[in-house]
Image 1 (cartoon, rainbow, N blue to C red):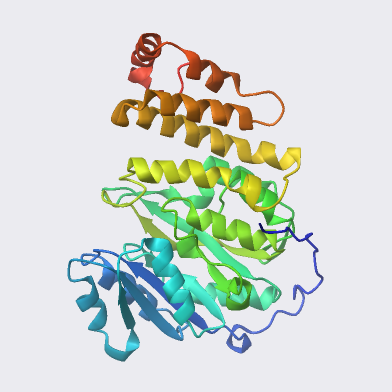
Image 2 (image 1 turned 45 degrees about the horizontal axis):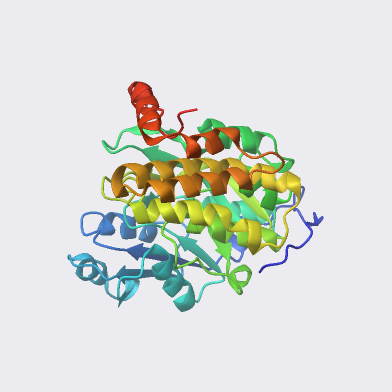
Length: 355
């Protein structure tokens, strides 16, 4: 169990006398987990090598690929360190990269995404204004399966609303230091993307991605960091691209990954000691959505009707205060009635809840 540290806002922001970017110590190791990404690994690696602020090293962890991923990553010679391991999932691969990294800062990039050339330079400028930060991130562009731009992460309504409600210090228009405690913020909304983040190495001393999970493990790592008082800041510009793939974990969610989503959404309830009621309220919508989706998958695919009902009842009782009546009622409806009600709602896609 992790114990939360109280958040203290330091007075070390260099608002009036920012450090010249060229004088900011920003030694970065780039970690790229890769599994069967022969079509995209070259583009990802090139986007790191073409940074206007050069990285100290590029570490590609080939996570048991059965295609040409490792061979393509190795063709860069001593510019890229490629290490192969048995398949353990993205968390295991990222952790292996962290363990090998020698930089003072560690940045992450999935093998199907890219950084823009100025990403690290702009984040170095952010650090020049706010030298106490532990986690630097930025906005990111989202491309759909057809590779059409779909806006940026910061313009997603939930993310935009959350970031807009925070107390911040700004330097120029783009460089932002979050003054609020990020733990309750992240419980409610995951406002960053792993590919846009750079983390101070010493902040990761006691933390790694949870290898047991293949959904939400990045959210949990940043929660861990926030629970220990890590300071977050961001560049208010898209500096990376998230490119959807039909075979990615998010777009090809198996019953296992949906189960992981539910399990990891509950984990903060016991991972950080007894959460106060206001923090449980922030977390509960994440638990509720994950329970609805998992229950429907168990119902439709696995035909595990009893298990689906048990998940809905458990989640209903986790709601702070009164149980979630919608989930509770759904868990007791006779199977024919539940199926009939769901059929009525299929046209609008509302299949996770029928009440």
